[in-house]
Image (cartoon, rainbow, N blue to C red):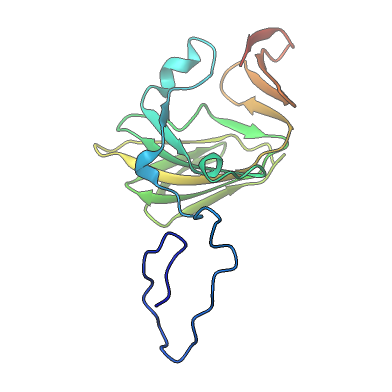
Amino acid sequence: MVTRRDGTPLARRDESVPAVEDPVSDAPSAAIDIAALARFSGASYPPPHDAAMARRSWLRLGAAAGLTRLGVNLVTIAPGGLSSLRHWHAGIDEFLILRKGELTLIEDDGETAMRPGDCAAFPAGNGIGHHLRNDTDAPAVFLVLSDTNATDTCHYSDVDLVAYVDGPRRWYARRDGTVVKEF
């Protein structure tokens, strides 16, 4: 019988294929127990911008799996909530796929309705501010993937705010460079 590393049996598609012994049977399973993960909520934005994120929560799937070069988060937006302030990254690519519910993607040039299975991609440095809004009466869930560069500048389109990441140091500043908050 073929099993996962934890001993759980796998259904065999073709019984004529011989079983292969797992060479890393002592290694931890790559499966992530989502129910066991801590749920994060809110935002690190300085006041008053942090209040707008009260209806957002997420699970850090990539971090739970030990990924260091790829950020993977499962984000839930409650009715009336936002994914973030409208923003764009100079040094980070972002990709998302809507898993459940409906969201409105808001970009510089307009709004797009998104339904389960719809995807959106935001290349680093494209200068197009974006975020998602839940205009329905049900929660929406999306998976977002991004690289985890040690340096980035994130520009917020609708407010006087810029986020900087330089190695371990992270801070928000106004567009004139005045530091508002370290995070």
